[in-house]
Image (cartoon, rainbow, N blue to C red; front, top):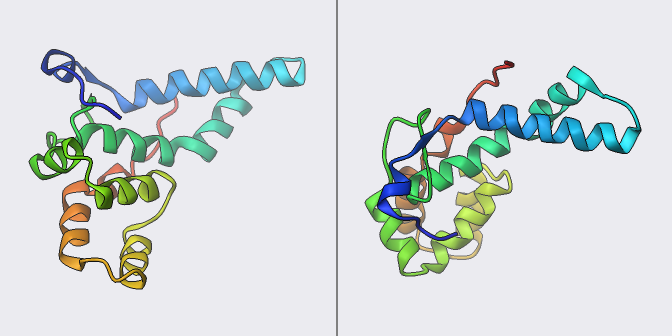
Length: 140
């Protein structure tokens, strides 16, 4: 991921609208695969399978300054921006795990197993605040 310009970072998107667009893309693909319009079933399927991961990935974009989302009240994290810009390996490993569905406890256990600095891991997890990305889906 790369950090985008300040001007683009000020454009604030909506997770819900973005989710609806993704769900409609999913509906189109699934309808093509099945040879008929899958309709609302495909939309619900996308929200059931992908909504939470979609929100997590968008949260990561938000805190590293890649894109702004109105559902998150904070702004980019100075700590995470600094670590991201310096290609910090620990941050990269944590972001990869979180974007693949790992919870905070999973990351902490992994870090302990590998003897990583718990202070650094906890600081990243606090700034990332991935739990604020647990948004209920809305169907438009």
